[in-house]
Image (tube, rainbow, N blue to C red; front, side, top):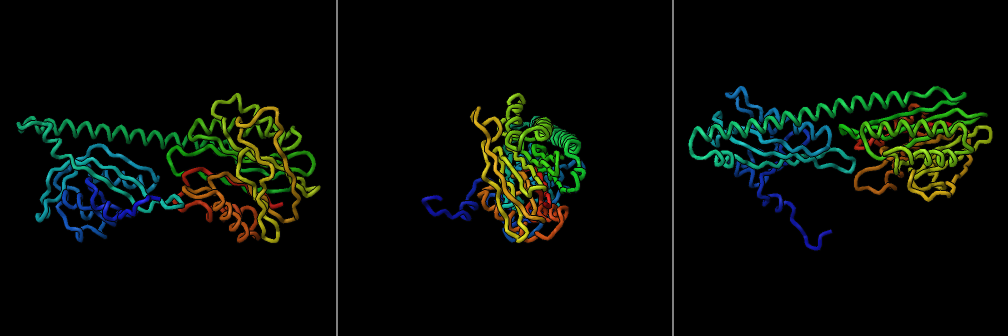
Amino acid sequence: MSAFPIDYAAVFQALPGGVLLLTPQLVIADVNEALLWRAGRERHELIGRPLFDVFPGNPDDPDASGMRNLRASLERVVATGVRDSMALQRYDVEAPGRPGTFEERYWSPVNTPVLDADGRVRLIVHRVEEVTEIVRAGAGDHPVDRVRMEAELFTRAQDLQEVNERLRLAQVREREVVLALQEAMLPAPVPVGHHRAAVRYRPAVGALNVCGDWYDLADLPGDRMAAAVGDVVGHGLAAACVMGQLRSALSAAARVADGPARALEVLGIYARSVDGAESTTAVQAVIDWSTHTLSYSSAGHPPLALLHPDGTVELLDRATDPPLGARPEHVDRPEARVAFADDAVLVLYTDGLIERRHEDIDVGLARLAEALTRHRGADAETLADALLADLLPPGGATDDAALVIIRL
């Protein structure tokens, strides 16, 4: 906290660059003095009005793209929650007091989201610097030179805009490839023995912030099941490939290892040979219905949640060790065991389900426990959907999330 009280409203008005605050619906919520001066408008003409009603495109210029480009940028910010810096734009504005008469103007805009605690876009800071005079000054006094310089600068700016758009489209295509790979590697589970589990995977909202998370279920000898979730550091295609290797390795180890701790130990040894696997977190549980017990071990992962039939939630955190590649060698991983009653529910998840920016993880764990208690009578599939609806932000999370629900 600052040692001096700060009047942020006064700071906003004193900013030397023009700034608009926009709602996600692109309605003007506030405007500073610098922008009013540049636009030649009064405050009451802007506040509460849609941006493009106040600043329409030039209808007499069929090649005008400034309004279209700005709208696309603002909509991207709302959809992704990510700042967007635009190339130099020609965006003509109506002359003050002369409706329908447009003046040629050049601008350098940056659009920045203001997010709430759940990662949703609450406002957009539209900062814009007018560079009309710079464009004209760089062209010299001769009218022909000025026109040539303006045309060259504008053309280069539009080229940059097109390059940025191609990059965004390439990121969208990569996201589609990665999600297809993720879907192939994380199929819907078949019944394990006579037991059923519900699984979910939700990608992050960002173009490449996906595919580091996984889940796995394995049928074991006797009336037993192994369940696991994990989270690879990083995103995109590289993380998806690492995820696939680690998931397969842990699934194999679970079928032959003597308990979840030993399975994670084998996975840790394997991870040392996989680039990008460092600091991966994972947790595995082995459920034994014949003894009504489950054993578990965690490599730096958030605790499993055990919902008891009376509605109380127990966080299983007595066997947590550092992530893969971050623990001393020749030290046994811990393993713990807990009893469960018929109709209890085991929940495995990755941190994208509970974590929020600027929020302690205990708040997210408490939110999970409350949701589990409230929906404790639901079957596994219904409970999985209810948890996603309750815990993920309405606009999507900034990290992907995997979830496994097993009614015991």
